[in-house]
Length: 236
Length: 399
Image (cartoon, rainbow over all chains, first blue to last red; front, top):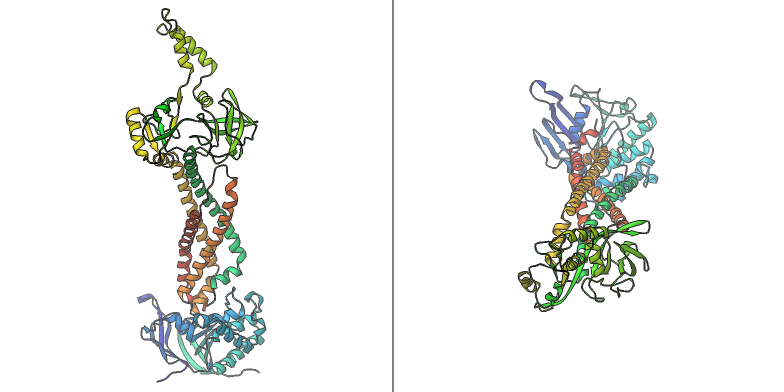
């Protein structure tokens, strides 16, 4: 079966052994199609971050299967060899804080990923400028992170997540430090970019302002997820 | 691919420059220490070169005048001239002493040179001002480092000498400037007793019935005369004929004349292997300590710089930066820091060397060795920071 976007089946993650074992995730199932933006919400300690780390190929699940853009990443203990390259080429990350590299200007912060993948500098910068233009921060292309506002930094972080056109973007509370106007702007950008680049976007959040914007939401509590249909109201 | 290390250095250039300057001063001291050792070796070689000798004839079973007291009769040079292979032979004395210079005094090696002219064994090989000694008494040629000027008078024991010539790079094995005076004056300076001592010795001799016999009226005068003369020099310098080997000439002198003879190679071995060996070990210890301090400083700075970037390193790892890229970034920074330090150190050493009282010889090969050593030290020093960077968990930036 050909799976676009991302799909996980019966994914579990256990920390510790024997009596001290704790299951952070228990048989989690999830599927996000290309171009779709879904929310992942839950209280603190529910397993959100653990799930995000598994989806981001940062930690290995104990059991289950994960398929990303038709490629099996984990399958009951087996995993692909080069997770670092996988993250670089197939997963885009957007964090709560932008975490831009302070010694690179806005363009090179975005262009760094394709450069790491071996794309020539000029081509990488051209791609970065295209994205900065799409996100309306092209006028700040040469600015250093310390010279950018919080909103500009977050848009550049989104551009960085998108620049390699990954099949999936994982956004970890991307609107937490923003006011409601800017938060909704970021969600709008993520939706636009998901459609434009046919990317599956998973947004981890407990930001009440943006929860109504998702058409599908995964709730997670005590390591167990359940899916519900969201309102899908994205103000224009 | 852009240079992450280069961008980081440009971003925090002040930190790098100031750290590099601090490190550079330390490297400068290290280079100067190496230069001091080279200077000591060079002083020894210059001393031998300037004597113009191929062989040194010295008192039996001594290491010669540069290392130990040596006394040989001042007339054996004539018999040495009869030996096969000997082209030239000349007496020489060496005496290191304090010489008054105005209100101050200067430590100098007084060299007694045999009568002759420019080119005679032991004479200063060239002058930078004035002329060579032409009289048998009371004239001197001084090294510039002694601080004496043409026309100055200097006092050695009871006699005054006028400086008639100036030379340069004529130093003892310990770097003291040389002052050349005629041999007779130098012999007196070295062996002649003061007036009171002569008087006391004369009284003792007169009181000795074995030496003051009424039936031998000339005996006492002869004994007293022998006590007040000084028929010794420290060594005889020998130049051999071109077609002879030093050892071939030295061997019959040692066997038949009962002296010890050193050739150039042996004398260099004594100067470098024995005279400055302790100083060389001392300097080596300093160099080792300075290298360790350099390594500690670079390690601390690179560690601190890496600690400041932990979050960025975690992000870089999360977005797929390979470990080797991160290792290269940290290593490059350490190497650049070492390079900045080396340039500052080299400039510091070059400008500071002439100020030092002892000769500091900065050889290009030492600079090359220093540069390679610094880069090796920086590479080793970055290991701690690299290990830390490799341990950074990319998951830190999630959640």
